[in-house]
Image 1 (cartoon, rainbow, N blue to C red):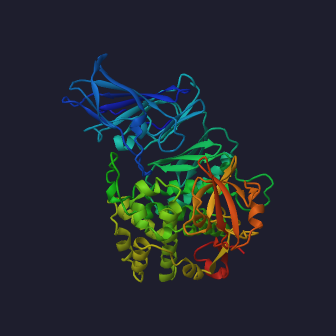
Image 2 (cartoon, one colour):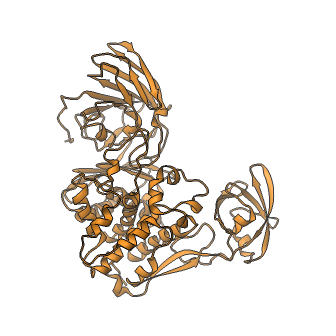
Image 3 (cartoon, rainbow, N blue to C red):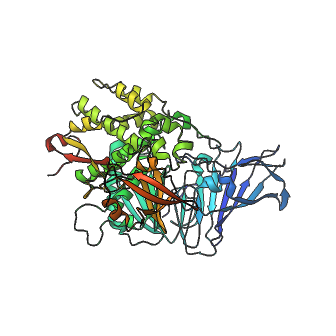
Length: 606
């Protein structure tokens, strides 16, 4: 039987969504208001969606809006880029419009012959003055694909399980927190900690849903046990769009919207004799773990600046280092704790994160609280100069969380962990709806006897530069060593064999006619030679340069020697002189030297 709720007799606002044109990527939307403001009802659409901190101006996709009452037109006028106002009227009124939906991401809306997806921040106009009232949503099956199914976490009023029908939300804030996935869906249910979960896939795939849900169950069980009862949801759905190449996730109150590649769903690749999980599958599970962890850390425990969300304009906070950084630490760590990845796999992933943060000079240009505060422009609108100008509050935040976890364990003789602190924080500030101030975490940690991390956190959060990673890891029998990468694109947590003999000082990618520079690292060889992002290298020392020849060209070079570079900038040919640099040590390789010291943190098996 489907999970249903009683029809809300007090509903003042109802919505109808119809996937009217799969080929034209159009949803038709009708908003019916039973009691509009007699002085002229105002309506608005959010400019951004919670969890994705960029003004996206969803209203730009609204087409042909009009209003009527008793089949007679009512004037509706735009009063801002995302706001409209009705002429004064009384009695039930309906507003009709279409929304162009062709953004294949987790943030907005998408519709074609294969699948449909939407967040209600993209489709459903808010009715000013009535956003705290209950509302209903009806989703119709597309006439072009009547066999499609539907999946969502929104409570159902009527209709079959995974069928189209009516749904209800307690208010507008709830309405926009339930994404919908439409199409020929693959669905697998599983139970974790007594709670029903669903994995839902749209798009072509050959995934083994039983294997994936077994892994997801372990992840969910571990988190539910970590935070303790009650969970902030009574059911949970992983809504997953499967594509050839893509990656993304966005958290919601009882679900997550995911975008992943087909390859990332393969838990074992043909010809792979290793016991290690394929890295793409590991990344997919980490993404699921990350978004699930957000059920506690940002969906219920959240900055006070987000209480409530101001969806017309940016909401600034210094705390994203905590909400995204902590979550980024636990997404990989909990895969290991749940027994899905080994200690070696976890340390390799951690090395990747360290290498990513330390490559480039952005680490020395921006503090992590500045990164959090300026996410609206600098992080979510990164350009080719990002490695030289910003630091990721996701990645460096994860490293701060790592340092904090290790210090708590050391200072408490392994009696206190970061996971325990997270649980207490959630029960104190999340379950109660209090929200956190900028200094909440620091002050909260002060209450634990024998714990003194104030100086570390002050420096880590408000100053720029590196963290005491090597020293802390050494206390757990892990050595951090830096090694040269295989090439300028290859900095990670692995030992390169062989390492590059020289460094270009720029990231590049294959181009139909050469190598296209994507990022130039400040004060390195490419920078000094005059190369810039988007330049296309076509020759090095008068020999053709492309993705097939670049290894040979690099292997023929020596540090300190010069090379003639021919490159196109737009349609102009440049001839530049580049002096090869000695390759920097950009791979962060973690190795276990004293396994007996590791057991308090990782599950080591020799």
